[in-house]
Amino acid sequence: MLDVGCGGGFFPYVLAWLGIRCEGIEPDRGHARFAREALRLEGVRVGALEELAPERRWTLITLHHVLEHLPDPAAALARLRALLPADGALLLEVPTLADRRRPWWRQFHRAHLCWWDERTLEALARRSGFRCESLVLEPLTGHLSALLRPAAPEPLAATRLGAHAAARLAALATAPAPAPGLRLRLGLRRLARRAGETALALLPLSRGRLCALLCRLRLGPRRGAAPS
Image (cartoon, rainbow, N blue to C red):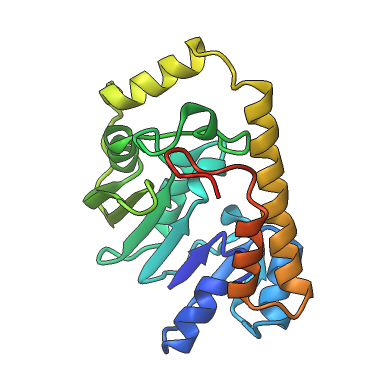
């Protein structure tokens, strides 16, 4: 199998430990070097999707939180379709406007170029030469997971946004920005989380001790929780 946008190689590493042969391609040189040198994954290399040899075939291709970063997702899926045999499969996951758990100001990310709900993702798959075997809104993450099988491409028909996705877009256009105090707290929490990740990588801290430390340093109680 092939993991496109494999990052530091953690997913291929777990699969290799399970005895599954998995190659990976990653555009970031630092991430790919970590996968090859620290995790000893010889099957991970630096490169972009367009650089994959057209004559190669993989039984399964995975695309986890990559499609939303690509400027032409339909072309990317069509390219992956050409790398699969007739009985192959593509497993992908993307963030979605159908996620009801996040407030609107946390829903959008500047690095995400495209967004989908269930209908528009399925339409994209059909246009790119796939049929959607399963499409699930994951309850734990709020992300869309899809298992796609090769099929004949279909022309893209007009697809209406789901009611919830349309409401999200309307909220983005009309709702006021978060209060300055809220933006500050969100920024500080993000900074604390990144500092914790760095400390976990550099210091001899267990994950449990680090989580306990971050909980003590939390910036205010969660909504509905009694203050400590």
